[in-house]
Image 1 (cartoon, helix red, strand yellow):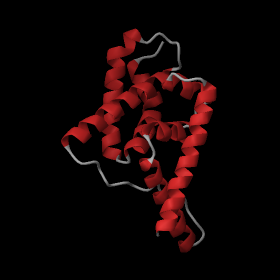
Image 2 (cartoon, one colour):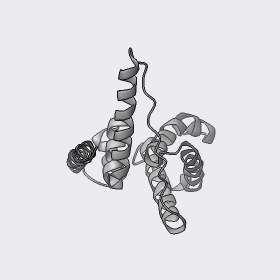
Image 3 (cartoon, rainbow, N blue to C red):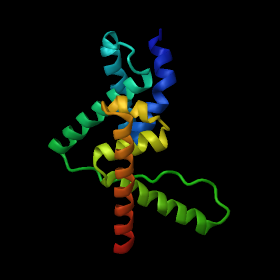
Length: 167
C-alpha cells in the first residue's frame, strides 16, 4: 500500500502544519511531527483502513500533542511565545501592520479556545477537511462537528471582541 518514506513525504506537511497551529512553536511542532510518525510506524499493523491515512495520522498527532501538553503542565509553566502567521505582501505598510496585528490577535484567540474548539477550526478552516473527516477524527457525527465549529467560531469572536474592548 504505502512505503514508510512515501507516507512521510506525502503527509509530513499536513501533520507539521496542524501541530504548528496547535503549539505555536515550529521547533516543538517538528519534534511532535517526528513523534507522530514514530507512533504511526509502531501502530501501522493495527491500521485497518476504515479512515483515510491523513485522518489516521492527524488522530495520532492529536494524541501526541495532548500528551506533550500534559507533560508541559506537569513540569513547567505554559509557553507564552505565540508566533503570528506571516502576513501576505501588501500595498502599504499600514495595511501590512494591521494585517499582522490581526493575525497575532487571531492566533492568541485560538490559543485561548478549548482544545476541541481549536482543533475543529484548524482542521476545517486551515486544513480544509470535510465534516466527515473531522467527525472520524473526533468519533462524532458530521452534524455534531458542524455544531462544534459554529460554537468554536462564536467563542473565538467573543474572545476577539473582549480583547478589542480591553485595549
